[in-house]
Amino acid sequence: MSSPHARAVESALAFWAETGVDACYGEEPVDRLAEGAARLKAKAVTPRPAAVAQTPGSGARQAAPDVSAAVEQAKAMAAEAQTLDALAAAIAAFDGCGLKFEGAKQAVFSRGNPEGPVMVIGEGPGGEEDARGEPFVGKAGQLLDRMLEAAGLKDRVFITNTVFWRPPGNRTPTLAEQAVCAPFLARAIALVRPKMLLLAGGAAAKSVLQREEGILTLRGRWFEWRGEDGAVLPALPTLHPAFLLRQPAAKKKAWLDLLTLTERLDRPGRPE
Ligand code: URA
Image 1 (cartoon, rainbow, N blue to C red):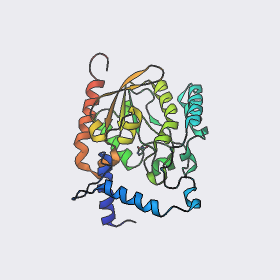
Image 2 (image 1 turned 90 degrees about the vertical axis):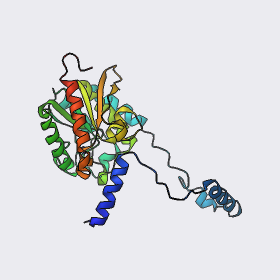
Image 3 (image 1 turned 45 degrees about the horizontal axis):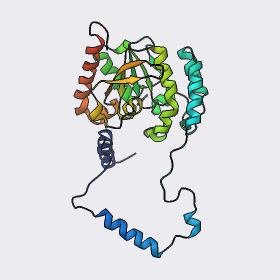
Image 4 (image 1 turned 180 degrees about the vertical axis):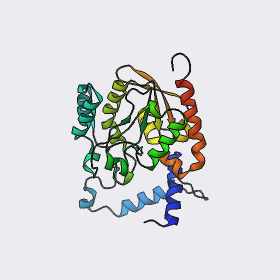
């Protein structure tokens, strides 16, 4: 069990990561050019041993894995699914996402109303979801349910994630993992035909909308999700309920987002 100090540090880091802060600055300026020049000079006088220099991946950044074959396979399997049950079976049978083989107990696809006008898309299953086979059933999911109920959306949502297997240690799924799962998510949208998408958290918002900003910049603003079949849907990023559990003061922002969503959903005429 981690100490209160470690938990406080984890919470603070999670807060900054969630808000999009990915770099730290010191009080004093650092001359990186001078540092780099010194390193180059040192390198010139002490050549690396050939064996080390030839080790694959040493030094250089690891290239992103080529997932195009897995994406094509996911597209083909997703396209064949004519119902949500068939899609759930296709996901369970798909071997192209590495997460399936990193300790996940089962595939976790969806819960909620398949005829609901709102599709909630989260990041990926956690421990409770992995054990039960349904998304958002742990503490974060219970908070999500309370918020949806308070907003009058309880029975009007279909809930799923950007990836369908639990990332080990509940880490954020990689872009590659999200990319190979994306055709199944797109097919779910095509089968459910929601009126709008609610994107819970930065990882979901960035992946679904192909944006790079942090969630505090994206949240509360309408974006367009465009499917390969030409479908266009309004999509609203909001804060992830797990983040709200760590930072309860941010609940007000998430509540405003839900009001933004329901206002558009229940506006007379088309939601667009
Ligand atoms: N967090 C998510 O993003 N999805 C879940 O299903 C559970 C927790």
